Length: 490
Image (cartoon, rainbow, N blue to C red; front, side, top):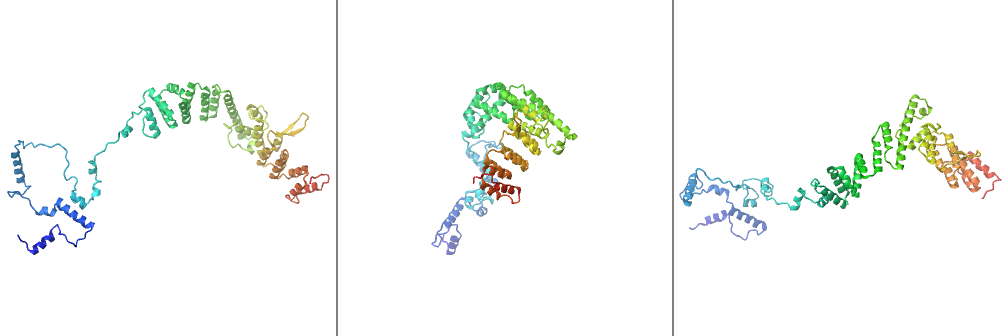
């Protein structure tokens, strides 16, 4: 059959395959486009062509119709010779997936769209939950499954505790295993691991067994004692010390319980009961002083509170009490006594002399405390009496267990007048220190008299320039310079 020229042109122009021409662009994009078209034409039939072409068999009946299906089934039965019960068809129980479950064909991978007309892209298709459900699940390594079991040895358990991994101590039921676990923790030299194991043993063992085993393990014992102290389990700690034979430590732990008692009378009674505990000699003296001091403070507080409320003493009117004396240290109690009860007889509980004698306060500590209290009240006569002593001939002299330069500093802090300061500055033995203190606190007479005793005319002339011309100090310097009886060194 010979085609005409117009028909040839229409065929070549309408065909899916174009002839080669030298005018085509030979670039990568064009070749990719042609390859895509070729694959689509081979693998996927055009939807328009499927609609236009109708398939029929050799007898002329449409393929896929009901009559065609019945005949086809009957012919298959006759050809194979199988005897089946058509009223009870065989049911296939094997699970299967529908062929079109994914909705994608090979051509859709090139086109970038689903066959069913979905607008999802190829990259989005792999994020679907339905596709992920059918992905094969890989088995985890056996080393990871060991995190969910508890068949570790004591050594492995300790290593896991150090590494911060999951662990379980509840599997160690026997005493031998628990002790091995404690020994491994001690050998690891990790305080946190040792404490964790000790807490487990504290919960799972009786006190008698735990105390008995800790005696032979000094490091674990120290950790356990420190843990109980930090947690405030004093009762448990007392029992531990008692079982270890450390009676002094046991007594001290019981003594510490007085800190939890707020009521003063109950605390006093508790301290009284503590006197019978097996303290060391030094600690027993301390506990006795504590009980005696609190008992005395209760008496003084009750009496002063009554006197202050009834306005019987002027000292409480002029200087009202700002706080209670209860539970105060011994030095604070002595300062309170020197402030409000100075001059009382030694037989009274509130007397400074009685407190000094009862609690064995040293002369230096008593002097400093009493000096601060009397200087605060500006009682300079009492201050002077603290340092004045008499010898067997009746002569008086000022002495002090501490340096007079410190006394000058205390007096100056309490705003002592210059006359008082000069008296004690003159008692400083070191000349340079005396002049330094006199210049610091402006004790002019001390400086002038010191330069006169040194017979240093030039220092005296130089100091004259530092004082006012009309002041008594200036006139005194002039008189000394004009005194012909003084033999000056320069």
